[in-house]
Image (cartoon, rainbow, N blue to C red):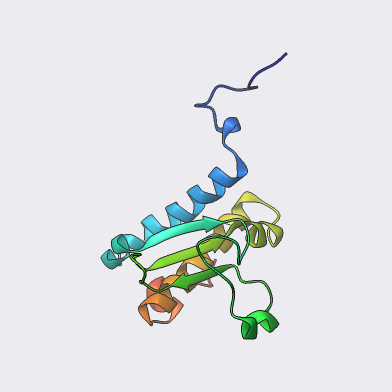
Amino acid sequence: MRGPIAPPQVPLSVSRADAFADLVYDSRDRLERRWSQLAQVDFLVLEVPGFGPDGPLDPLAEDEGVPLGRVLSAGDGHRDRIVIYRRPVEIRTKSRDERALLVHEVVVEQVAELLGLAPESVDPRYGQE
């Protein structure tokens, strides 16, 4: 048998990268209801840090380990961007539920950094789930 196992409208045909991006965008949508200024922020999903539009990492920050996300300030014709790194998050989680929770926490932390607030101010349920 050749060809797809399931038709495109069935969840089986969703790639891991697409499923991860959906988690990021779901988290963004949850927060955007409360923080309307997030509509002016681009959310990106990259495989790993340092390769792509996020540019090279700060060499002084390497002692902190592999980042799960990053805030890129507006400039060079770009709006503010929040980048979430898929592979480092996936490696730290075992199930889809764990992954969804960690993705939301990383998104909340990055939004908090961008807005200059504490994560608990961005989402009162931060760290409780």
